[in-house]
Image (cartoon, rainbow, N blue to C red; front, side, top):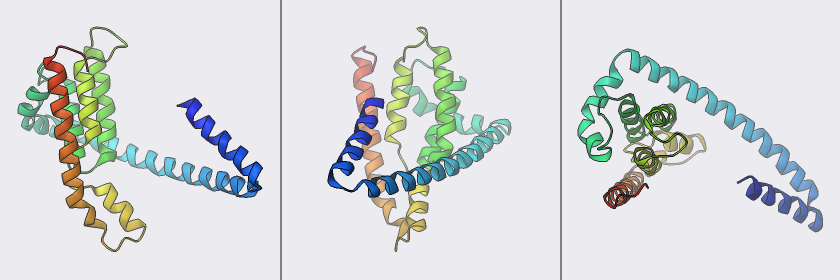
Length: 193
């Protein structure tokens, strides 16, 4: 990725210099840098807030209750994991956060789930089936209410910010179904995903 991004930046700079648009390249670099810093600061605040909410939910026993409701799903997706493990609790919280469209809340839970799965791994530094399955299903991200997308659309002046709900449900349901089918096929073949 480093080479890819570096190459794209260099091509942009060289193209701007050769076409006489170097001033536009410089202005775009400055404004993009400002936008990137603003985005990072807002993301850090949101992730910190949801990490705190997750910790409160965990201390209040909500994570335990929610993960209990997801046991049948967890047994199906992760047959090798103990449903009572920390990893299953964090995976459940991540899935529920994604389903409710709270991607910012899903991130801290996903990171904790990966840490917990890494602790259970027999070969350190290697992603096992559970880690791969979690990653694939997490990326597919089934969402019923895409809260973040609705907020972004409202912020940028969309006439109907919630218009993405229906297509979002269909798209994420299909991607999650494909992810689950892929994981089950690969696990039956006895291969690590």
